[in-house]
Structure formats: structure tokens, C-alpha cells
Length: 528
Image (cartoon, rainbow, N blue to C red):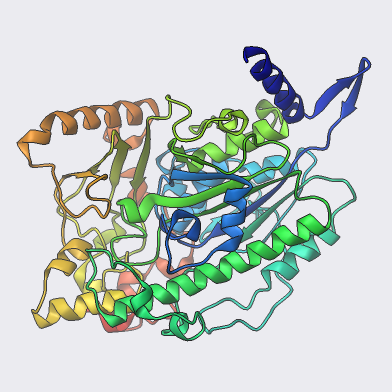
């Protein structure tokens, strides 16, 4: 048995190194292609492979069945810019200077892995959302393509007004057709879906579903027809994202390239709903992840429980492609390669060193005096989520008078605010918008929705103390400015878009519109 395992490891190692030996001669093996399908905000477990019945994702499910389904994948930051920056660099958002914030200038001194692939013989490109939103320039002021060359010329007629008219599949075909023969590729499919805004009722009408199909509404939202309809609109857009993924897989299969393509399907952050995207809970950071690679993954169809961070994907890809990290110009990774999971025959828990993941946030959207952020750090470990809110006196979703802009406008948001303003129910408002305590602790096996805070329960003091110490030591090792009392630097970084810098001035003058900040709904504003 030991000999068989040894031979298997040697065989897989030869494939991953890109060469094997035949009669004393080196025979080059083509480097793997890479297809990244990144959805714009999906929370775990909202893919049908995880058992969610009110969304159907055959593309994602196929990747899981022919590869690996990960059940404990997390992003270090639950909003677009910093999450995507972490994905591209293999570093946690608090290790990325300006890029810890939403809408930043991407730091000149950090290199993304797709830039590194481009410089090492790969043909790279993307469609729709690459690294977004923000501005990336090199030292000369020229625009950087962090996710490769854009392919967005093809358009289509979308099935609803909330869905992009970019023809993702058509642009992928253009990308493949423009590539030099036999050159390995990396393509970033960055869908707009299921990002806001949705066409209300599209999930019922186009998705052919009923609000009764949803088995449970999370306990932090009111269970009413408006919220259920909003959830089905979200599901309809997930399915649209997945439909293009399925077509891309079919195209690669027809061209004989699927077997040697690493397909990574995930999301940048949690769903764009209250107490999810932009916050620090399970629905915020816990994301779907499935990966397939016909030539490189052993014992396909496995479910893996190991903790995986989006920061782990970069070192995994670079190891799989055999690229010398020292020649990429990239900063030291915080993430770790999980190639050992690919080569393992085991399922469930595989690598016992993957004991936890870290999460956090800094400044998301403007909406507090001085454009201050809401810094948070968290750790998921031993079945618990522990959170430190550094400034509990601040409003976590933005100030009330600015409409809580850290939560995107939606029917669910409006439903919660309507209840609060009418005085009929303040609990949902409290969970999504009210100030929070300095410390939060949740037992995820019993409370995955993170509703019952155990931080003040004396019986959990040993757990809280242990997690707090582990979090502090990890952040210290990662040179997080917050643990060195230098965290105010994050609030001093400029925004990457000019129209965000005069946010409060426009608001005072009555000039702020949805065009200025499309994630805000002026109807949600209170007096300022």
C-alpha cells in the first residue's frame, strides 16, 4: 500500500512540475490553463451542490462532481475591492495598504498573480468585472490590467433589467480564438451577477419559482413576501452566472482543453443583503468554492472540510504552473498552497494545519463623518467565530443620516427600515444597522446565522480568551497596522474615484443622486 501511494505522489508531482522522463529525455508537458469564474457576491451555501433547493447551479455542481467541493472557504474581506485584491495577491486585505479599503488606488508596489502569469508565458484576459472598483496605475501613471486584457465587445439581450448585457460566453470565445496556438491561458470570468440591482420579481417570473420554495429566511431578516421575492431574484442571478460557466466548460470540452484546465468557481464576498456583504459574519465571508482539474486532482468528487482562504489560491496556482515565485515580483504570500489536497485521496478533513481563517474589514463605502471606516478583525476556529470591533461607537453600516450606505439598497433593506420607522419591530434593524459591542462570539454549529452573541457569557470566557490571543498573535505576525496602534492609516488613504471624495458635501447641498453613488437609495436617507 505504501508503495502505491509513493508511486502516485511521484506521478502527480511530475505532472505538476510540467515535465516527465522518457528514456532519459525531458518531455515537456503543457502547463495547465486556468479559468476563474468569480461571482459578484454569493453566500455559502447558495449553490445546489450544497443542498440549497431554491437555486439550481449545474455548472458549479459539475465542477464539484469532477473535482472538489470545499465547504469551508472564506474571503478575508467581504466587499469587492479588498476581497479581489486579496485574491490577486495572496495577502490578507490589511496587508495591502490602500487596497484594504473599497474604491482604492491599487498600490504600485504589489503585483497580482495574473500579471505574473502574463510575464511568464501565459495569455491572460477577462470579461466584465476584473479587479473592481478602484484605480490601478503603474509608476508611470499608465493603467494596469490586473486581470489581463479586457474582452467585453460582445453583448447580448439579458433576461431581466438587473442583469448585465455583456455576453460573457461570447467574449470567452473571442479570448480563446485570439490566443496563440498551444499557449497556456488564464481567463477571469468576473460576472456582474448577482450584484445589485435586481429587477424585482424576476426570480419568480423568469426563474419560474414560488416564494414558498425557500425553505428558510435567515433569522436576521423579516420573513415576508418582499424578502422572499428578493431572495429569489438573487437566486435567478446566481443561475444566470452559472449558465455562462456551464457554457464555458462545454466550449473547453469541445476544444479538448478542459482536462488540462484548472477551473476555480467562487465569489468575492457574501450576498448583497443586510448583515451579509460588507459585514463580518458567516453570510459575509463564508463563500462557495469548487475546483476541477482533470489532470491534477486525484479522487474526484470529494467534499473537503479544510479551511481555505481566497489568499490560498495564488500560491496554489503558481505551484501548479511551476512558476518560480522569486521571478514574479510578487510580495510574500500570506496564503498557503493546497496542492496537497489535490493530490490526496482523502475527503473531509485532510490537512490538520488548516485550523482557522481570519477575516476583517476597514473602510467600505463613505457614510461616516470624515469618511471613517469601521475596522473589524475576526477568526473562525474550533467551531466559533470571534470578532473584535475596534470602534464600537461608530455605526457598522454607515450613519443613519446617510442611509446606512455600507448596506446596498434593496427591498430587504427597505423592508427592515420600514419596520423600524413604523415602530413595529426594531430587532431586524438592530441586527443589521445598530451599533455593535466591542467583542462578538458565535457558536457556528448551533448558530450559523450569528444571532446569539456569547461574548458576555462567563461560561465562554476561556474560548473567547483563546481565540482572542490566537487572533492577536496572527495579526502581529502579519504586521497588521491595527495591532501596532497605527490603524488610522487606513482612513487616510484616498478614494480611487473622484466622485466619492465630496460625499458629505454633496449630501449637505442636496446634490447626491443614485448616479453619484449607485449603491445608495436617497429614499433611505433620514434628515442630515
